[in-house]
Image (cartoon, rainbow, N blue to C red; front, side, top):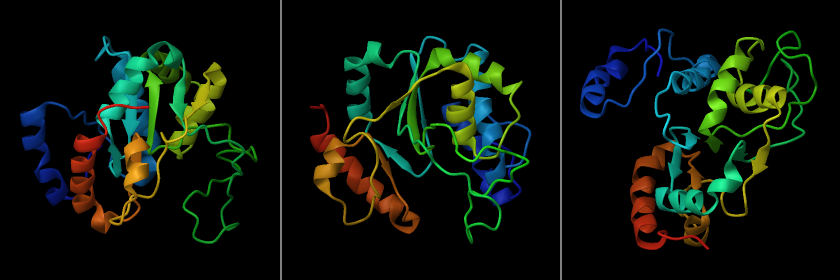
Length: 221
């Protein structure tokens, strides 16, 4: 995480850090447009030898629920098939949105910052799986490639393309659907990553989904 402007937002940080020792903080402000810096920090941290006995990195957004049973079982079965690549949405042929071209679009980026008209194939940032051995290469490449603020495009698209790293598309059922209170339990049982675009319902929904996952999602097809 980055530094925060609000004391209220920061107040629980020391307790969480002391209890779990699982937070890395960097010296820049928490801001949506600093996501690329945070994403590269992940690669830098791994490059310094932390968790070097772990074969995969699973990156998720904070509004993403992960079925850890389904995920773990899948990684055990497909271990060799996932080496040297990203496993993700592998989103392709996305047109770049320029300022004022689409009203209220938060994905606008200037031609000066990114002159191409189409983004390279990239992993949507809600969740992806990556071979941990790729992290040092991505971090190294970031030192020579000017950043853009859209972090998933930059790290899993531009840097990955520069390095020739494949982006393998999710199998059916492994990507997300919009997680709502009236959830589809059939889809729930088949998904690894679930995303909520309805944050006011999210805490209650996650509790419900966790109970469903524990009851029904210990194995995969």
